[in-house]
Length: 322
Length: 253
Figure 1: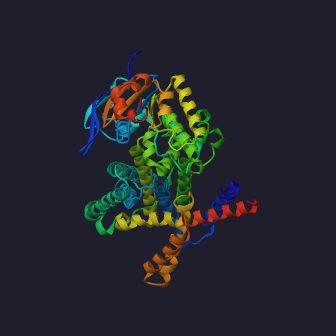
Figure 2: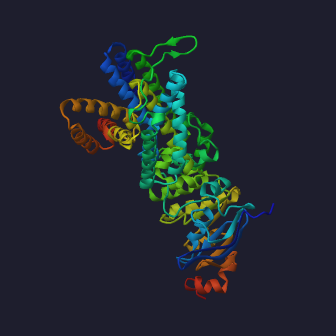
């Protein structure tokens, strides 16, 4: 293990940088940083499923979209209160993950992956075709960022530098919750599932139920990312439900390292920044992006974070003379 | 309180044309250390798999403490107190020995679903983990990663995980396979001691005749999926059918 204080130091530095960005940056920097944080929430939740239980889902875009459209519909038809919208988005994502997960966790490996993909395609075609509800290929547009009304005080969110701190709050909340879950009894059981899923049953635990729980939790975090992303863009994009979007948390987790806690966060940063840079230079950004991702994924065993912490560990044992 | 722990009624299972269990009727009483023996392919593993829930019988019924469990999934049987260990080491390789034992204990104490309380705070569970590590003799290895253990220690851990699930009836599938003589006598001493304490009833599947006849109060002999001998060690030794098909080669007289 890297020294505990080094990790605390890194998190303190991250907090300082994120707050500084919120206070002093221009609109573009704020927007990009929010994109990174939202993708990180998506990927951290996703990695609770992939990294801990080893289940590879290609359907999590559906839960992202569930959050997005849940918030969008409530915001347009009921009340633009951001917390109400987020709550609605999470509820829709939760129910959808519960139903889809119920069918998917009965299977593993390729069958599980293909089932999630199939459900993801169904959700996309619903979003695409139910024009009267979802707006079809236009998505839901003109979603307001209403002030955050907490009764005693009302915080405006319309400006980017205000909304930034709203996203930052949920980013930290997600880190806290996911860290808590990983350290809990439940987290240990998930680690056990990853190690030896057959034995889990012989420990007196229902493999299916624990897989489903991990699936639903990751789905709810995907929903949270969807609500925050929708408020950021002020509209919902139908392609956020498309299965190709499901690849993002997979790639991000792989880049950062699926067996590390910070991996998805670092992966999100690399993903967003790289893509932004490459898009400026070439129309074939997907080609170059793919090549660079290939190098990162094949070059860093266990992802960037996994490889770096492995390196630090080796240095430490070298210096102690073993 | 003379209710049988486990009762099997006319259990049948075949794989294609191979009959692995043929009309097996057995009753296991609490506290009786029992061994199941038989030549290779006699259906010993199939019987354990049927009883623990890994495979389902073609016909027949299984009762545990009077409740029918024929169709229950594995984890429900484990929760009722019917556990097994494995012949091939089947642990959580990249977790510590401590966590290996902790997983079934968290399940037993109904803590496994807690999501927001750090597992490090479950101190009463930690005590029990250490007790079990003491019992199987792995106390010193608590913080070792399971995959780094010696083969004998892995087998001990295997038994430890099974014990941690709080079994009333525990099937040990060749618990001494691949052990050196020192480890072997250690684990047998353990089994004898634990059996005397009376919380757990042991049923052992073994190849080694010395172990079987020194340890068990009751011996069941399987052959081609059927029970051909059942009784005390002496009764089984003197059973002509058993001598014919199995012991005949080993104990000529």
